[in-house]
Image 1 (cartoon, rainbow, N blue to C red):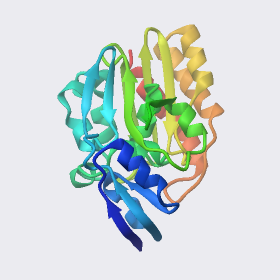
Image 2 (image 1 turned 180 degrees about the horizontal axis):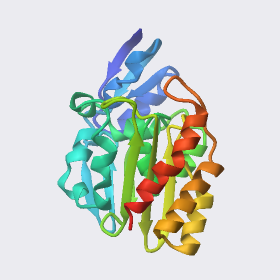
Image 3 (image 1 turned 180 degrees about the vertical axis):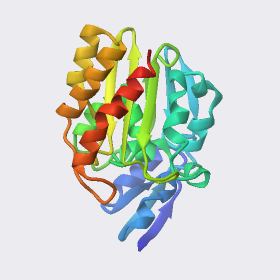
Length: 265
């Protein structure tokens, strides 16, 4: 059972950080608390970011900023994002549970929490996204996934560069419609530079750097896509959980990665 002893809705980022630091058992409440509700936890002070105006999707010069409180459904249906990244964001969001869930879940919550079952995190990794924390502290998403989180930190926004010149693709394998994915993959190319990410291994999403180097050297064709996809499966590690075995995930990775790469042609 989730217990929140005290609840606060700060009006500024400075106030939110002060509240977070005021209690060792405080926690930011985000993403509709969808995952928090499933656990058995007591929070002395819950800091809700709902009044900070972080639910925006804003094009800037050569980039797009997505506020930490922007919901999955807002990102899925945003007219600007539909015209960027080859429409990948709609593909990455539309199969996640149902619209009611996507109206509550936020991009900031899934990114900051490093959820291993996340579809958006695999997309963010393929797009070389940057996280902007309180105080304008910036960190590449792949670097963030590899490091331990700081005790007192608040994610303000996610920045993705070159939205109008980046081609991207996302796909996943699910046991049934609306279920969490068994495996997912994303790929992107901008100015001849390729990125490939695979998620729900069932660990956090990870780049297939060897396969990326191969494509950056040889270019993308149907033949190199098949080779790179096999390389991605060979270089990444896979584990077993209730949804699928590690052997199954490794076996289907080449087909899934090849599928997203061919969408870039």
